[in-house]
Image (cartoon, rainbow over all chains, first blue to last red; front, top):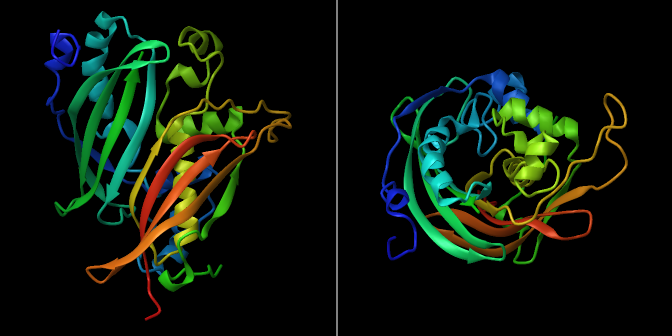
Length: 158
Length: 155
């Protein structure tokens, strides 16, 4: 066990990076996302309206980076973490929350490259006993190599 | 379809973000699973949800986060830019069943809300910070969060 109280093989994963993932941002995928959350904003669905806006093209609602959402290394990171987490006996996994920072709008037709990093894993004592908090960072670049967004997601195992 | 634009000068500390109402139904969860690609059975299978200690299928945290994204993008208008956005999934929410093919049964309605906590000009940008949250039918904040937006200025 480490100072933070987490098993060595789990601690060893801190700093692990995923392979880059390429995601094509499609108009139809943006529209299905907006439909699913009952958001009728024409910037996310009306090509004609968007063309005349400052963006010139349909844009993504915040947090959408193309389908699937977990493409940005999140799924890969979960795949790496799960076997180690299972050994700790903490097999109930919950999404804890997320922080985003956005730098540029993402338009339909953009091709994003993203990757993830396991930034931190720490133990905390919760109401129902021991819990592991894993922080996963994701970085998204567009086809011009410009940084469009960064996120930090927290996954809770209990 | 002209939309109203919000300006930096229109808001003060304490100004309310125009609320957005949402109804989570089992159908919305299915649509969200397809649109997001999150096929975790926690959100559609009773026995798995039970084994995970949440009783029955719960609303995706990320769906509630997307509701908060709607709250902010609708409020800031086409000329506003959402710069930062964060939320924590603190409380479980359970979707309404469907009463018919298209309509959810009577039940809980969720409200996405927010209020301005700070405003300032930095590097020529007109920045507004907000506290935001999703409130369940009992008035409990199940998803607290915050947002930082850049608004156009009239000056």
